[in-house]
Amino acid sequence: MVLKLQLFIIFASQIKQATMTWNEIVYGLGDLITATFEILPTLGNIPNILFSGVIFAGLVYWILELKKYRAEAKKNGTIE
Image 1: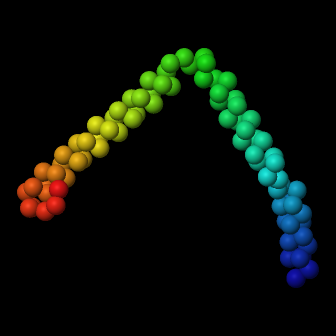
Image 2: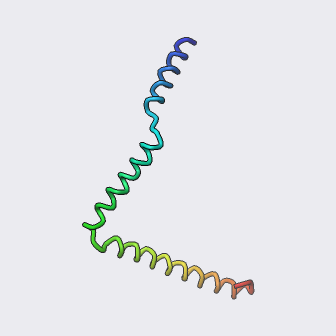
């Protein structure tokens, strides 16, 4: 029983040392985002093209799904 208590105390002290404050988390996240923005100028127009392509593909998929559901609704005589 004493050994379990000692192990718990050691574990609790390690957890206390490993915790981070909200300031450290927020500033660390801000530094990460700032570093990614420094990379963007070297990529040029590639991110814009990729985002536009993903959005266009999503819109095409969405329209094809709507067309499929509309055809099924006409076949079943349900609401379009």
